[in-house]
Image 1 (tube, one colour):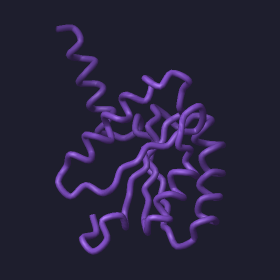
Image 2 (cartoon, helix red, strand yellow):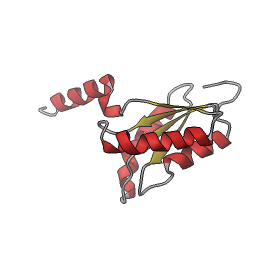
Image 3 (cartoon, rainbow, N blue to C red):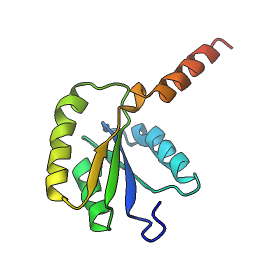
Image 4 (cartoon, one colour):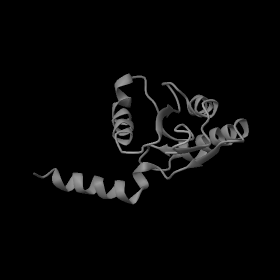
Length: 128
């Protein structure tokens, strides 16, 4: 976190969204766990559809509050159609709308090696 401006950097956890508000529970838990870490930056949620805020809304709010760097972290298992087709368009539009804000894209969470290892450990532990 930037000590001079705590809102200068932020993470947006980006999910698909669902009609059932309880669907976002795990994403809220990820956000809360990240925020509990010492020196954590601002962490927000954003959704492709059905839930608010949308990714453009979340990035616009962060940029308006002075964020200069935003990392978008897709909370998806894999790079499917939404991440290949929809997300690049949303990011291009956000970058054009907020040229003073560096917007980066992380790999889908489910494709990150530490996440794969954690899921394998979980699966192996399910036998008791």
